Every structure is written in structure tokens, then in C-alpha cells.
View 1: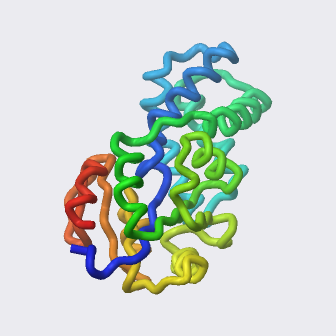
View 2: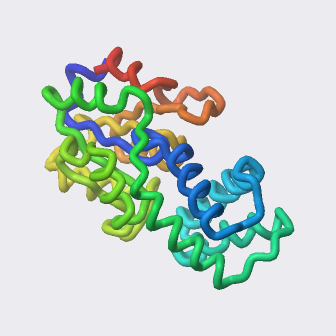
Amino acid sequence: MFKEIVTDIFFDLDHTLWDFERNSALTFQKILAENKIPVALPEFLTVYVPANYEFWRLYREEKISKAELRYQRLRSVFDQLELEVSDAMIDHLAEEYIEHLSTQEHLFPGTIELLEYLRPNYKLHIITNGFQEIQDKKLHNSKIADYFDIVINSEMAGVKKPNPIIFNMALERAKTVSNRSLMIGDSLEADIEGALNVGMFALHFNSANGPSHSLCKMIHDLGEIKTYL
């Protein structure tokens, strides 16, 4: 489908190549136990996962700062769980979470095989809303950094996906054009709509099993990408 058109492929990182939920859970398993927070991991994650998603939405929409994101997502969870956790401990947990999260290296099944398959025929890049120091460590620790020509993050661009500025910066840095470029990501709003709005092609990796749509083709396994490229 894209084989005769596309020269450059842009990937999202979290929830697309790097298995964020698995790596995040392992990180919380470590830091909650070490800091003796009296909550079972499954109970904590049941509240944290949707809370984190919502605070990231607010951050993406420029309604809260990075510091507020890191603090409020934990404060809201402990409040919902009716656990008395001090602000000092929340700040400590937030720092430990960021420190240890990037050391995790679990990728979605088939990531390396896919990148090896694509690398001979396409230029590969990353566009991520994540924080620069964390995303760079994730790429290196999971041993996929060398597959990508450029890595654009929201701190570098000054805006977050789906803002067209970050996509246009990525296209310019990659020395390519939108109608030769494909975006692959998990977020319908940030990745898919953002890419389509600047004239890029898009492929939706529906890793969270969201509802169907007609904006672009959808896949549920990274191996399916080979049928389009």
C-alpha cells in the first residue's frame, strides 16, 4: 500500500515500540515496595493507569506543567485509594519513577524484527511527546536507538503532538516531505490525526484495543506492518 510512495517512516515510541504499560508496572513494583507504600500493585495500577492517561491529556493540551503532571498523577491516585502519603514522599516517588522507568527495556513483540525489516528500504525516525532525557535513555537501554536517523521530542519542538509544528519540524530535520512520509503510532488524536493534518500518511497501531474508525488503516500487531510496506 505504501511501498511505492513512502521513503520515511516516523514512529511514536511509548505504547508503539516501547511497552510503556509493562515497563511502568515493573517500575512501580520496585519503588512502591522499596518505599513501603502499603498498596498491592494491581490495586494501584487500576487507579493509576487511567489517571496517568488523563493527566497526560491535560499536559498535551498545555493545561498543566511537567511538574504538575508528575505530582498530580500520584497525588490523585493516593487520594482515591485513601492512602496518607506526604507530599515529600510523592516528590520522592516521582523522581524515583522517572529514574528507574527509563532503565526498563521491554519492547512490544516483533519490534526488532520489524525495524530490521524496514531499515534497508526506509529512513526511520521517532516523534514523541515524552521528555527528552527519558526518551533518549529508553531508546538506548532497549537497544533500538541506532535504528533511527532523527528523534524529535515535544521539549525540543516546544509543542506536543498533534500540533503541526512538531510534525513539520520532524519532516524538515529528516529532509523529507509529508506525502512521502508515514506516521505509525497508538494515539488516534496525537499520532494519527496530527500526521494526517500535515499531509502525512498514517497507520494506527491500536495497542489498547480502542474502537474502530475510518481515518486510516489499523493494526493490532507490529508484524502486520509488513503487509503495507
